[in-house]
Structure formats: C-alpha cells, structure tokens
Length: 220
Image (tube, helix red, strand yellow):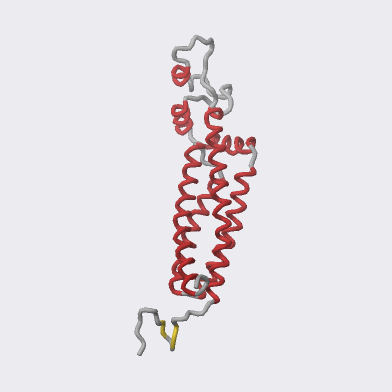
C-alpha cells in the first residue's frame, strides 16, 4: 500500500534524484542569467547558483539516507533541506520583487567593476556604447562601434545606443526566470521534509533478528 515503508523509500529516492536534476537546472539558469546580463555583480543570481550547488549536495545526502534508512542522515537531511527552503524562497522572492530601477542599479554596479576589456566585448557584441549614457564614455572609445551602428545612415552625429537599452530586456528575463524556478521548486522541498520525517519514523518491515531481510530472501 502506498504510504508504507517501501513506497515512502522509493518516493524519497525519486524525489532526491529529481532534486539533483533541479540543482543542475538552477546552476544552468544562474549561469545564463549572468551571461545574459553580462555583469558579475548580481548577488541575487549568485544566490541561485549557490542554492543549486547546495541542493545537489543535500540530495546526495538524502539518497544515501533513504537507501540505508539511516536515522542520523535523514535527520540532518530534513534540517538542512528546510533551511535551504527558507533561503531559496527568500532569494527567489527577491528576484521577483526587485524593481526595474533596482535591477538597473545592480547591473550598473557590475558594469563599473568589470575590466575595460569586458566592456569592450559587450559593446562589440551588442553594438552599443557606454552603459546608460554615451556622455560618460571616454572620447574615441566608441568610434569604431559608432561606424558599425551608423553604416549607411545620414543622421548627423549618429551614435550607438547605450548598452542598457540592449541589455535591459535580458536582465529582466533572467531575474524572472530565476525567481519563478526558485519559487516553484522551493515548495517541493517542504514536501520532501515531511516525506523524510514520515519515512524516518517508519519501521523497516524487512528487519528481523538483527539483520535486514529483503522480499527476495528465503526464510526457512
């Protein structure tokens, strides 16, 4: 009957395998978010990456604990997973709640801290000049980019748009993607805590006389 020892064990194993895949998914989303925003100072996105790595480690602990029905492992698994739920839920909520102005401030901080080489790569890739204004760009630094942007244009004093215009949509999408996935999977962690607690308190029906007896064993 589902809800018994074997069902709870298999469900917990399957759930932790899912969490391993989710952990890699969160890492992939975090990497995409950083690559899409082209800045290195996005602490919220960094938190999503950290949650992905920690989730994989906790899932391995839960897998071993579920397979061996190890009381101590399952106890620490429940405690750590619940703490991860609180952290992940808070970070994901922050990703969704942060305003457009705050996202721009985060991105501008990262832009100011990266090297000139990185800024040049961004400007070359997106055909833009400066972050949110071309007036603060050193003279001559965008001359080649402006020629590409204004090729065939008859507009006087033609210049490339600021990079914020090109990156704003990608930054917003990255934050919403991180927040949405984080919220969705954080609630499944609460279910995993209750499932682990139920499984931990159940008695192994195949444990007899000091050794584990499995259904395919023959007892004479």
